Length: 363
Length: 211
Image (cartoon, rainbow over all chains, first blue to last red; front, side, top):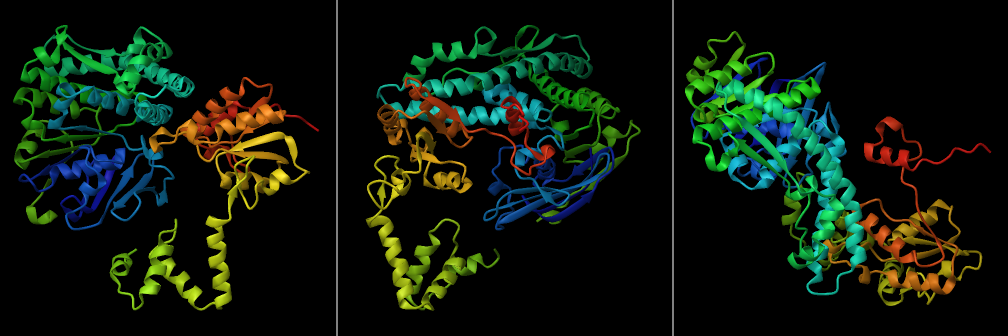
């Protein structure tokens, strides 16, 4: 998939802006605050129907305005137009070629994008939710049933937790708990199986990319941690039912799964150096890209935010070499210095378009 | 939509009109603009007509009962359906609320009686089994001994939970418990049906009989 054109209307600091893109490298340069990252986030928004940075739609509106839109002309086997509109008093809509999707989830997977930003470090240092999001995003781009399962699981879990909370010492209605569990078990089990399969397929891709990026034989691994590895989900729920009543929430299940990062068989978080952690995270994201690409045959968008600030010069050169290959498609990259980006790509024979953003361009 | 803010700020010349607009605009699906249209319409109708409407509205609160047997809205102790001798008393259709009952009535396919739960189990909204008319259906089955109880509930998490809960409770009685089929809408083209519905219709397929 390629983006030919992007138009932003009252999106973050862009009142009314548009760009026509080249097939390979599209670079945005300018001082801090001109809205480079916002352009990348707008592209991500068109892919995921939400901001990468967990901003609410309200937070994406240009200050003082009450609606915004993001429009793109795309090209795959044919041309497509995607128009996303949202605002304070209107319902959020996504339209493909003028036709609105009945549900936003129907759009997921149509335009795949992988975003690499300095914030990705949270994958290593934040709680397990970040890592589940990484897994879930990778899978749901390609598997609608999985996405529906995730949504259904969340709904049942919310009701189950609300039920546990409503007890407050009153006698447990075991039948009601049972009715939630019997809905939760098959869905949770399917999610577990798919995640496990995903990790099995993802790990070798990750190791291959890590090697290419780090250029040293250093063993890296990922292991999937879930209570369902050793027990069935219904056994897990049963074993924890007393605890759940006490804690007033569902203490165990696939909503607590985790992905453990290892370097030289040790936990990365504790034993990895700054550089090793950064390389690990970039390799995870590139592996996500390659996973999506190899599974779907399509080339997702690659969004690189402030990448040169993130990794050292030799690694970033290696990164440029990788992404300039045919295994990667259209790339959107942001940096404070246009000439620095140009210099990075100079050794490669790829189409390069530089957009210098001035403060008055946007606001 | 562009006129909305102006509308919110507008000044009324009569407080009586303003009150009526405020009251009507609190209805679901009615905004200020529509409310004003309705008020203008009512202002131009004969007094008798408006009084009639007001009476009908007041009666909704003062004279409406819940049927002692099935729990639906009724003018008397027992509703028209429960009192109708042509209704098959051996069949009970369990529905969420009055509007679902009306939806099933509109099909003209059901000649049995109803039982209205008054909602679905949803702890998130503070609705537990004891807040619903569940004990009453068990009592009815025990006393009336129907042949079949049909559970006609929404295909949502709340509907499915309530379905299982009620079905399991009914399990101890000698009664057939059935669940309405979930599947493709009539006139619907297969390729446009969402994958969950389609998957479910496959699992719950029925044998095709040539008659």
